[in-house]
Length: 465
Image (cartoon, rainbow, N blue to C red; front, top):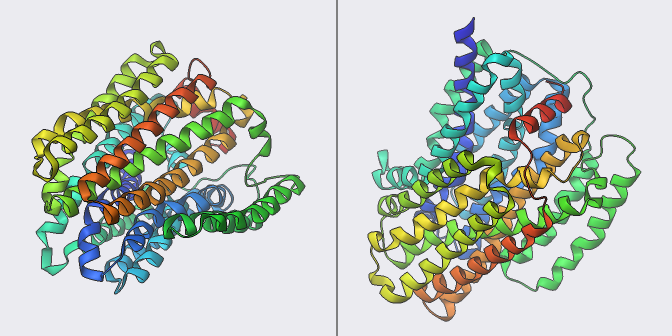
């Protein structure tokens, strides 16, 4: 029945909404978590970044589980695990427990989310495919952009005395309804020729990432990161020995444009996640804003993202690589504007005085996110699109986690030796430099991006949908 597949799309989008809300509402809740659980600066970084860290490590394996065992079945398992993990997050009695449950939540999301593309493609006929995907972008963009405002409202509303725990409890009704509807509305599908799992590769990569990430967050001797090198060497050797279905196709790194694109992606998403963390912490801890006021203050930033995304979609191929570079420099200008705004007004700065800087950063950010992967994937062959997309998505999550760790550590260190305003000014300059460096590196990318419709077709063909 035609209406059934549209209802199924709403169910799938509900899972997407939960994932995006978890990524955007939490930062606003961090000061409340700090006060309630006595979490230190390091714990706050782990709570924020642990989700994306686990998501990145499990993502490729999660996609393969759906290809092998059925996308509907794995989606349901991931969704159920996500609901349980959200409940455990809400019940966490300590900062350490919340870090552990956030890792579990991120792993569950990595099992659930990769199934979405395949389920949508097998649910709709070609003539309705564009309309179905046309709904996904605006809903996801709006959810991510308004997440901080939603988080602030939930925390300050303090429904039934839940406080910050409400940002996790909101997932329960959404997830349970989606889980109940999935059985009746979503049909099963799997890849005709699925690739095998590489659990050894995932384990080695997880250990290597943890060895890099731990000293970065803890702010300890960074020489300890060198311990990741032998593990990373074992991972590379394992991937080379594996004749079929490696976790990562190492041949991708022989393509200069793709390797440069990974670096561009790392720098951009590091800067972006660092900006989001610093902004929300500064508004509440530095300026004393309530969670609701802090969330509402970010709305101009959300509007900027929306306008940037529309602008990038309208200009399309006409903007080319110069358009991407202008967008990145716009992000840098937004960070610089925030630096000078806080330098001028200090802790007396108002929400309205922050609007120009936030709109500017959001405008650049929204203009980059949409086309960035298209430019990077223009540097790989058609038969490598599926594998390259998986690597890019995992890389994006890892970069976000590293940004929270690195920029967050700088921010907290500057608070200890100075003040909140000095800390935000310092980190905004760092973020501006990262964005400027990213813009410079884009000269190594192809001049134009791949068409998004073509990318979707190639991904679907290589996933067997």
